[in-house]
Image (cartoon, rainbow, N blue to C red):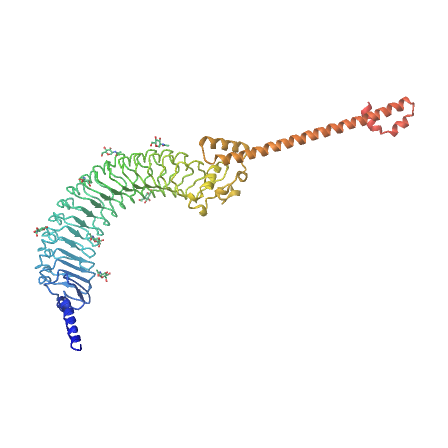
Length: 576
Ligand SMILES: *[C@@H]1O[C@H](CO)[C@@H](O)[C@H](O)[C@H]1NC(C)=O
Ligand SMILES: *[C@@H]1O[C@H](CO)[C@@H](O)[C@H](O)[C@H]1NC(C)=O
Ligand SMILES: *[C@@H]1O[C@H](CO)[C@@H](O)[C@H](O)[C@H]1NC(C)=O
Ligand SMILES: *[C@@H]1O[C@H](CO)[C@@H](O)[C@H](O)[C@H]1NC(C)=O
Ligand SMILES: *[C@@H]1O[C@H](CO)[C@@H](O)[C@H](O)[C@H]1NC(C)=O
Ligand SMILES: *[C@@H]1O[C@H](CO)[C@@H](O)[C@H](O)[C@H]1NC(C)=O
Ligand SMILES: *[C@@H]1O[C@H](CO)[C@@H](O)[C@H](O)[C@H]1NC(C)=O
């Protein structure tokens, strides 16, 4: 037994050693501040000032993050004949020697990001014909030599965003015929040479956002027939030439938001049959042409908010038959919408018209939005809505009408919106006269469909009812006269409002009281009349009695003194 135990321990130790051997071998050559793994990646960080002495026979990927390397010396990577990916990020790197990448033609991916690099020697990548990915974003690059990318015939992705580039030579991307992705966002580009992208026949994504571009030359995007995404937002573009986007038949996403466009040429968005997303918001558009949007049956999202538009052409959306979401809000000069504006959007699910200046809506405005689920109308100046406006929106679930100037709504306005479950009505200027009763009754009967009853769905006028909740109003409080109540009852019957029974009950109660009062007055009148005649009769009897007395006095030859004993005045008045 005592002999057996050490034997077992030896076996176990040998087993563990065998398991760890490759790692030990690797660790032996994995320098301080680096982590190497068995698949050949080395990650180094911290106080390193030069490329660490890694094993060139096992390093495929090298990541140097947050280091103190300031300079990349000539042929730094020549020993790493197997290195495919190199990343130097978040480093103080500011100098690259002219032949830094020479001797490493096998590299497939180079990322030099978030460093202080500002200049690249023109020939530094001249051996990089196998390079597929080059990420140079987040540096201080101000200019790019036209020779820099010359050799990169296999490059598919080039990221130059977040630099200081203000100008590019027309031929700088000329050799990049396999490029798929080009990102020039967040630079200081003021203009682009017309032929800059002409050789990029494979380009799928072009990002030019957040620059200082003021114009785009006609023909700038010619030949980019494979382009899927074009981002031009956040520039200073004031005008675009006609037909600029026509050579882009494959385009899926086009973003033109946050520019300075006031006008746009007719037919600008024609021949973009695959477009699914178009953003035009934050442009000071004053008007849009009648022929702007070509046939775009795949368009799903359109953003057209924060403009200076006071109206829009009625057929603006007519070619977007599959649109799902339309954001047409924050256009504070937009006071009305053409009646047929949403004529051809049978699939639209979400429509935002909030923060416009809309004062009234046409009864048929939404009549073709049969799939509409969300309608945002808050912060407009609507005073009322036509009673038929939601007749065809039977799928409407969320309707936001808060913070308008609503004084009145027809009692049956929501009757056809049968799916409605989240309605906001607060912050309006309800005028609590008799005509409000229809909608007040509807609110009282459907409190669960209204989400902001606690936030003040209350009278604004008359003064004596200010802040009085609509759903607790009664006819008595409104002092509705007989004419108005009768009128209300009839109109409710003709419109078929559900509130009709209650309405009729309270109306006949009022009529009953009225008749009762008349009967009482009549009875009082009769009683007074009868009393009056009784008194009159008694009085006459009394007078006749006096006459008889007087005449009897004469005939008995009594002296006139006797007559004075009777009430002389009364006798004189009635006898003669
Ligand atoms: C690189 O360093 C930066 C700054 O220290 C840090 O924010 C980032 O997460 C690091 N990235 C990697 C991949 O380690
Ligand atoms: C480019 O890549 C292909 C494979 O995708 C390869 O066959 C070809 O040799 C590469 N071209 C050059 C010039 O290295
Ligand atoms: C290009 O760089 C920007 C900025 O660093 C980054 O946001 C973007 O994701 C990069 N693109 C790709 C494809 O990596
Ligand atoms: C539009 O997309 C469809 C399928 O996604 C594709 O077959 C067609 O070629 C595209 N059209 C154009 C002009 O790119
Ligand atoms: C809209 O026009 C007004 C002047 O009428 C201007 O002050 C404002 O900046 C314009 N809006 C936009 C988004 O440019
Ligand atoms: C809709 O697109 C077709 C084809 O591109 C075009 O002829 C028509 O004028 C467009 N309609 C509108 C209202 O722009
Ligand atoms: C509702 O839609 C139908 C067709 O689906 C149409 O005939 C009718 O006029 C629409 N109703 C209103 C009030 O517009």
